[in-house]
Length: 473
Image 1 (tube, rainbow, N blue to C red):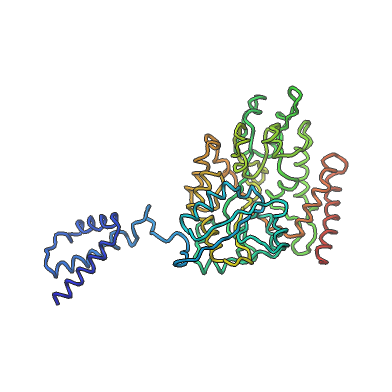
Image 2: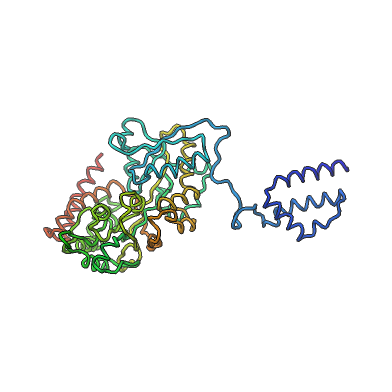
């Protein structure tokens, strides 16, 4: 009996020694509080003390291990296989701006070396000869794909996507870390074909020098489109032979996103553009585009290349503005303008997504990369060093946006989150046909050649013809 007690005490003591320093200190304090350390040193009492100690290990921590902020320690992401074989993968963004190569190094390559050293990833630059449709034709599809919400239809039609929902479950990848609405906005028929790694929040970017030059007060959060029109009138002028413009939105249907206006009738599969909602949008767009001196040009290029545009309503430009050639541009941000009947509602967030191709020979290793890129650790790096807004629910990551970027220092970063995004839209081919028709006829309307009713009629007729072709295929 005595030998059994000694063996029990010895084994329990060895188990306690395996605890971390912080955990042992907690247990010691807890024992003192509960009087365990006042016990005598007989074998019977020693056994009791050790047993109590093991119970107190859970009792004093409230059933949690020695994590931080009262959170239980858990494995950070799925585990790799024991003694894994080296694996080489390829990754390609749909456009360089979705993940610049230098950002790829800090957000993928370097974290992989630390966590999964057996996995290496090659960055495939999207360029002539290596665009995704060309790679599909050459049967050389990258293992990992990065794209935006508007590219889903293209990637789906190329036949390279796969439902990753079963793999998320199999590999125990935690999806609760994302903002609640984010995953709902990229699900298709309840399935996930990707995970989001960045959010292109919308905001007004403005050139401080131009506002100072013309003595106009900087824009603030909460502006309406009527406010923007008045500001644009004051900033659109010619000075010393240079024509300066006040404001531009990104494209001819961007504003319609704010009101969640449909492009097509989901049941009839025909254009839904001939409506009071779209009529209002087109009239508001024309009111901006026809302000003297504010004729439409190239919104982004006029803003940070030519620097003749005072304001641009755009998605996240920070990853581009951090390039060396734009360091002399003095800029700041304000909340995206909204319609008065829907205050503080901005266009949908352009969610940048990462997934694995359905032809990868290493799906589990590719999913480990997907999980790592969307982890809190890498998302914090991304927010602090690249200025990308994170789709994760962790408020700290949101608050740390641009913390290590001199470019962001002093900027009104809260304006990136000053508006609520309208629900995302997964575009069908029919929707894309309507958008092309808008682009085709809007200039005739803004120039005064046709009125808004004729514009909507022309769009509807042209789009429905294109939709008929799509249906016949």
